[in-house]
Amino acid sequence: MTTTAPQQDAVFRITALWAFAECALGGVMHALKLPFTGFLVGGFSVLCIGLLAYISQRNLMVILRATLLVLLVKAIVSPQSTPTAYLAVSFQGIIGAFILCYLRPPLLAACLFGFLALVESAFQKIIVLWVFFGTPLFEAVDIFFHDILKGFGVESDVSGAKLLAYSYVILYAIWGLVLGYFIHRLPALMDAKRAIYTQIPLAEAAEPTPTTRRKRSWLFPLLVLIFVAATFLLTGGKTVGVLKALYAVLRSVAVLFAWFYVLQPLVTWLFLRWASRQSEAQKGSLAQIMATLPELRATARSLYQYVGKEYRGWKRFREFVVALFVVAIYRES
Image (tube, rainbow, N blue to C red; front, side, top):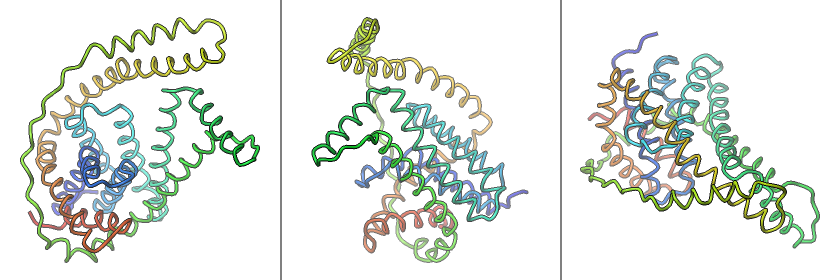
């Protein structure tokens, strides 16, 4: 299946919007003081993938190529991103491509895609917490949970940490299903609002301000190394009481050090090296997407302020998303 010229243009704009969501939309939402920014940005990326499937008439290669472009833009604009961020984008793009292109009916495919994409995001965060802080963190949550219950005269063997983890995953799963349903309704919502949002005035893109790179201090890594050494000294024999708590803290610091100063830089370097090779083949598309990012940032701010005149709360964000997609696809430059 091939895409026509208008489809290719729309695919490019949604790909640019997806890249913008991964690299800059979070910063815009923080500036606008929107709550649950990560929750919403991840959901917005899922909507972009769903819309790509709709526009390309479920063309697998279109979504996979868009995923590659988003990864490359993310590597260029946000090279400090963690490997887990690249993993999340890859997972969403790949499962979205196969589920949305091959599973029927479309509503079931969209809901399953949203469910899996958000559940993976939730599990990824929980696993990262467990790797960084180990079982002592979850034990501490259990103790805190049981102490609260005792204050109300309630005795329970339920693990507070597991209860929180299950609730967190369920929340993300429900949000994923909601997003899947929204993907299914999005084309009709865009058509209904097309005449309005293609005519409103938008702010011009501001000139990017140069940023200065701060020098890394050697003092903090040195202190962390001391903590790591202390951790190994405390590994002999069983630890109890204060010593056990100290060991838990030191172990967490040691894992954080290994992640931030060894594993993450290594994995990121390998990924960026691969991305630089891929960038040569995608040079034209990358340059075009990079050029649209400042304009998308200004557009997002204008649209959020515009819809805020009529909508509040959740409805404001929903309308903002619809408006952003309408402008990205239908508005003439």
